[in-house]
Length: 438
Ligand code: NAP
Image (cartoon, rainbow, N blue to C red; front, side):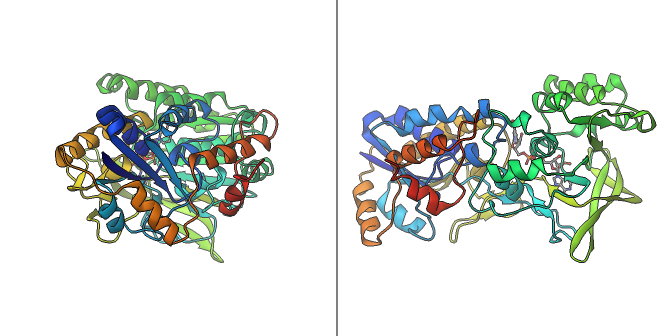
């Protein structure tokens, strides 16, 4: 019997568990740990609440979770309740599937000003992550600047522009929905330090901006490269650029009969956050141009975008773990094809940094199981589950099981507003209490 501990119950964690089952069948036991009492990580608290079709992938993870040889070990903080070294002594392989939950800092002055947030906290706020549920961003301002040209920037801009009716069927948490209902934001600037050909946005997500009932996207045609250059792009990127072209209007001719203007400001690199009394008042940016390698270089021309809210959506970093080699610049664990050292592995964003889609984690999971199989060979045979259970009992850990989670899930569904799949608990104690639901 092989015993595998996976730390993190997001997509990377569940695909790894699925791969272990496919590889060893009944000859493996997998424990999936999560510090929260609820599973699915990024699917629950990262994927946008109005993208329910993406979140539906959790049904596949549930199939894995419900099998006899996989179990969910919720409400256990690895690093606090139990150390990595202890897990390594108990399990034949320990896999870090901890994602990349921390914001990459923009590294500009003023980043700490009030009403400036990183996307991890802002997305966590509208998705009800217990760590960020109390963020309370001030939306009584007119202009929001969203820094970054990736899909997270699009998520944030879209959420800021949507009406309550457009959230029907979503699982946006009540506190965020109410705050957005009262929002005064009528201008969202999406800031890109490079140009339309360099965006990291995908066509479907960009296309959604065209159909917002309250928002008008706008691109300055002067920022668009000659149309014939689009032929050099790969097809997906070309489609994205087609969307940007469809949003092109000369600034002087821009008329929007909807209340929220969503402006793409390309070739604009943030220099500093301008504060007044500790609050953001503007973002100062420098006009850029592309050098021969396609990098943004400053032109020396600067200007300010007055605003009252800033969300930086410029990528994430994995949380380092004491004693585990870490690549600071890439924000991930140092590894070779998922192997940190024999017995300790990483997968998903913790392995390769925050890129790719949910599905990219599947081959990652299967890849790391190959490495583990190479290292364990026909060996294995550490204590595994019984060893951890003895430790949990001795430390009086309040482990939340998958069966408990199903109770919590039922309670969240039971308190959902009309048309919504659930109203998430945003407090750990409330989640734990909900498992007692009759
Ligand atoms: P991302 O795709 O890596 O985009 C980050 C953006 O931030 C890039 O445009 C980058 O510009 C910019 N940036 C980085 N550092 C910057 C700085 N110091 N100043 C200004 N701009 C800076 O990251 P993400 O948007 O966080 O998304 C993470 C992953 O999740 C991606 O793979 C994404 O596709 C995925 N995701 C998918 C969906 C979906 O499918 N619906 C939704 C959300 C997220 P440069 O290119 O110039 O570096």
